[in-house]
Length: 168
Ligand SMILES: [Cu+2]
Image (cartoon, rainbow, N blue to C red; front, side, top):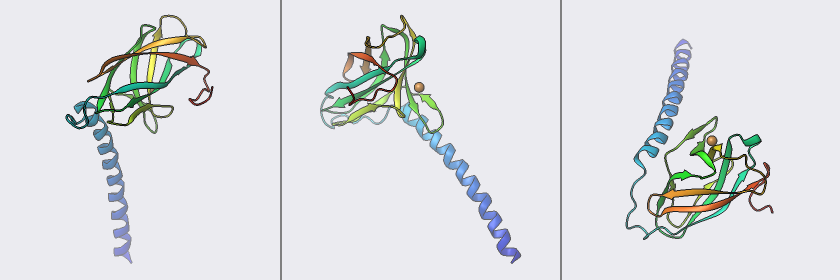
């Protein structure tokens, strides 16, 4: 009896340590993936062929911090979104939402013959320092720079806070 109780207690403690290690490893893996910029899949599928769809900016509260969402479609080889700027704002950063918070990332992979989606609850653009407070119906320019394809400029409409793509 007493041996089995001790065994249970020891098991519980090591399970707890295991959980902490797993959390630490998870954080490390995310950092490593951002830092290395991913493996180079050169020669995979030829040059990337990118187009941007479904872009929108939910109306920011009184000119405050805004978010940007869009989909980058790719009919060619792999590429990476490495920078976003806007003549309408002082700062645009790329963010990834995690379970409890969000973190800035340096780049996002655009998979070959796939799509990179920036959507609510996932990766998004964080836009600050508006030249002029955005209003519903404005179209704001975002300049998306890709590692291989160069810069693509898109006019992004400002939508109601509750807007979702697919609604008119
Ligand atoms: Cu964010």
